[in-house]
Image 1 (tube, helix red, strand yellow):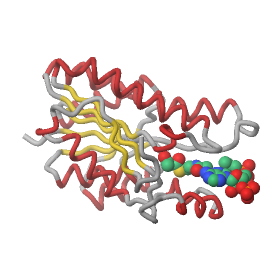
Image 2 (tube, rainbow, N blue to C red):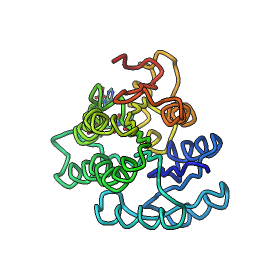
Image 3 (cartoon, rainbow, N blue to C red):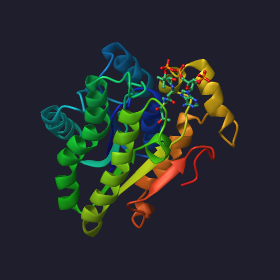
Length: 240
Ligand code: CAA
């Protein structure tokens, strides 16, 4: 039986690439999304991957969403916490709402989704959780105290849950992408992005597929000894 994998924020950008890579690796993949229904429908038509709508920042919605997915497709054995947003501004201009929203989606979402799937994984003695962090959670970034704090939190969350899951065959790892060619990065002002790319030793933005490749590795049957780790995929921009 194919393992059931759920990818949050799975209908676009890095999430979409992860969905496709896990599918190609033989998983039965389900995407979660919160934004455009139309885009999600097009994604499902294009890929054959079902998409379920709920907000990962909403604790009850995560419990209900996971229950619905499991009723239709079977127990979730692989969770990729990929959903994330930016609300960039320097601290002076950042509102409390911008802070709260990013913390609740990017970090709260990991807690909410793990709460929903971890008990089953633990009971079945097998599971893979991959949390998508960020170079900016490792190194900080102008205009991102909210995002950097949330992503940095993800790295701590990963190490703590890895210790809880280890005895039960549940691995928990993080990937810290650098600047990847997605809509999120395209939203960075061009003059700023130019400066950032100039600091990437590989000399270019990353591709979403280059992150997905790392996810497939961490979710493998033979990756059971890899837990609590952070895999940096950033073109050499930050060596941690
Ligand atoms: N690196 C280098 N310099 C930067 C910078 C950065 N990341 N961000 C801002 N600056 C510089 C600007 O170039 C500018 O310099 P000059 O005065 O020499 O022109 C100065 O800081 C002030 O910046 P702005 O004029 O842009 O100030 P603002 O108040 O209008 O906007 C900002 C500030 C919102 C931080 C805006 O600069 C911005 O959006 N920066 C990008 C932040 C960023 O990198 N976000 C990452 C999004 S992608 C992501 O998060 C995915 C991931 O995980 C990697």
